[in-house]
Amino acid sequence: MSTANALHIKPIHTNHENVLYQHGTLAQLVPGLLEGTISMKELLNEGNTGIGTGEGLDGEIIVLDGEAWKVGRSGVVEKVSDDTTLPFANMHHAAFQFQCERENIALPELHNRIVEANGRANAFFSVRIHGLFSYIKTRAVVKQSAPYPPLQTVAEQQEIFEAHNVQGTLLGYFAPTIFNGAAVAGFHDHFLADDHSIGGHVLDATLKKGKICSQIFDTLVQHLPVDNPEYRNHDFSHENILEAIEKAEH
Amino acid sequence: MSTANALHIKPIHTNHENVLYQHGTLAQLVPGLLEGTISMKELLNEGNTGIGTGEGLDGEIIVLDGEAWKVGRSGVVEKVSDDTTLPFANMHHAAFQFQCERENIALPELHNRIVEANGRANAFFSVRIHGLFSYIKTRAVVKQSAPYPPLQTVAEQQEIFEAHNVQGTLLGYFAPTIFNGAAVAGFHDHFLADDHSIGGHVLDATLKKGKICSQIFDTLVQHLPVDNPEYRNHDFSHENILEAIEKAEH
Image (tube, rainbow over all chains, first blue to last red):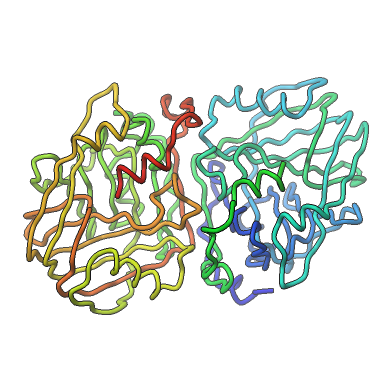
């Protein structure tokens, strides 16, 4: 845990509904730069809604209405403590706009419709979908210890969870193609069942009936762990970052 | 001019020495998305130091001590008015740290030494070098009118300027590899002679003697023109953005 780093962060008061805050980059996870470099408490200053992972890829984290939850290999949904540190997270202040209701629609089609409705494939935006999912398939990565292995090794050990007819919230972040590497280009979705029976990083879903809300950002606040010794000196040039993200995140 | 867009921008008060503000992405320039989407006045709220280009690639802009200057095809240094709009700019609040003095050093070697001294190839940072340059070679792109051509066509029409033994300021921004496309990976340098006899986008230089100052950022505030009709609907997937940036910017 690098709480020393975490304590140096000056918040820049991104209290605007058009701002997405990102700590770390997805590229960092690829070679196994998994040290936690910001605390959950600090992240909650940047928004009440978000996704992320704990130090060492400790669980799939989702933040809804200011409460942070994680799902690890056991599949059990647990509260995330304020002093938990994270290598990567997206956070924002929720000000979602209702877009429409949809019925009986699979996730890939749902994604396409949301991009179409927003009319902005080159903006960052978030989606929150609450409703009844006739099918949901999630995964949770397995927490690693230092020295950390690369993301691909970790992704091969992931646990898969499935459920049918579950009520819950899918929270997704969309990043434009040009930011692939810094983020996951396209959608990056996490899920939490209302009864906490299932959660995690979404691999597949079918919405039976639910409300689609979206929030478009004009600004990405990209915070980097520039004082973290492993990050500052890491040479990314010999790694196929984009291919590894594609394999591990979709 | 899309002043309507420009007027919608809410500043997020990035008045921190560790924050780099970027409006637009370099990727946008590649297919010719050259409409000005922020005003110089708005940019000056985000810092007193920066680089950029005007609408239609109107000149190579440099901002030093809160004053904005541009060099176009004539090579003459002109003041940039507050209502000038820009498709792309980097801005920050200067709080440079003195790094060292250097003598008789060519730009590529100087770049390497600065990255080494900062010890952070994965952070955004700025460098300001003031001194006597035994050689400086700059270029200025030629202002285009709508419908705008792609960057490569414009780059082929650039004007080249050279000078020997000129006193001036080189202002550069360094971006980590993973942000290539959003920015120019590596250094992006502009120059202004103290006597305004030469300026522009730096292609080559040799420093005879000068002071090297640098400023490391832990946060990139990336602002995107998400309401600009050409930007929001543009499909970047069929363009080789990175190759075009490499050709046009180095």
